[in-house]
Image 1: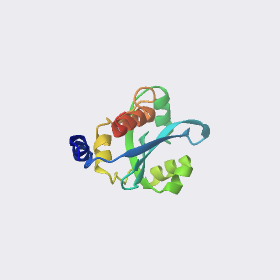
Image 2: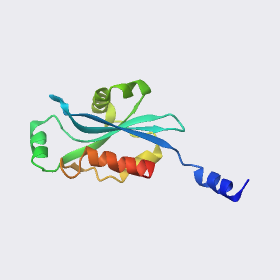
Image 3: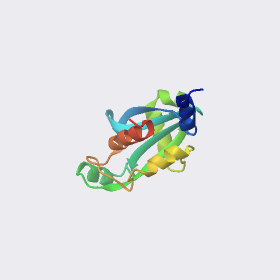
Image 4: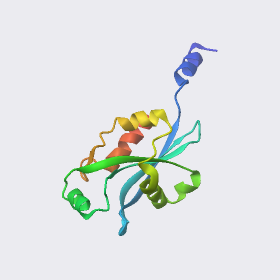
Length: 146
């Protein structure tokens, strides 16, 4: 074995490969064609674990929250994470429904993902400067190192 093969094995130990897919889903339920909300699906290629993640305002169905968002006012926000199976990836809107039901109660089963998500400042969301699209690009860059 060459020095580089040994080095590669040493460096590769403990690192997983991830696939990330970003789904565009409706931002408001009553405007299904207005697909601006991003849901990220992360697949750990080593374990096959699939998780859906998003960054969203708390009380997003409240008209005051929606109004504040459109006015560019910060609103309280949260990161939601839920384990999914491959069949659930076929319908992105179902992913949002699942995140709404159980996402805030679940955390990532992957410590690296939990650590990377923890680097995002998630206490508030601003529709124009700190939103789910910014979060999805941040997460994709951090997880894939690109």
